[in-house]
Image (cartoon, rainbow, N blue to C red; front, side):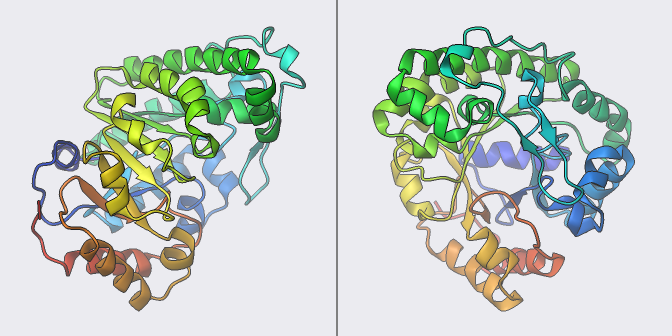
Length: 348
């Protein structure tokens, strides 16, 4: 992100006016490589192609905040690889991490990884180090420390069904796993921040919180997210595009000040659930409208999204979730136009 984009993002988080109305999208391997015209495997294995693909997105749409910006990742294999997960990388499909915990009894002996040396993490950091001069020469900076959340990673290490079952049947062991993963994540976030002093934001992604009841969330989610977001940065960004009605009221307590939700809940309702204390990034349907709709449908969805709000403060207009595969440049332009057509000002 450029200095201006970063300043605008912080203004949105603080509830200050930004003109024109801001547009932003989360972009990573499900969208960037095929949009650029390469395979997902090319994107992961060739640092030059990774840099060129991300740079093209920024240059083609300079008015869009692409978050987190130059995301160095290997999909869902990123953090589980540090725990020894076997990772599959099909040529042009999303990677997959296999479970490493066969039973809850394995949790106690699970080693705590060193993010500086273990799994794919050193490659991610080194890719960013090599790209940093080019990123900064183009007027951008590395702004976010990024990681999947503790429940998300735990579900990959055990398997989602097995992890959720362990929460109910053996909660002490499930809690021990989340605690261990949280300890690893604190080390990982700190390492990113130490490596790149320009980082002033944290971005965590965790859809598993959307499948928990309130008691489970308060036991296995809330205290650990509070730990992770308790860092001295300006932007504390959470993505959860699974159901969020249970967890959303706790976002301010978690320390979150920017939230990307799914499209199953109106932005207006999320604003009410969070008492307007959290900036929102969302939320037209990503696949059925942004990817599969025609230009007119995307423009109309953007128009209706803006009109659905009594106030446009603390909102970055986007999709409900990250940018999905297959979104065309034309449809991105249609979304930008739809938001712009509702004015350049700031209501509320």
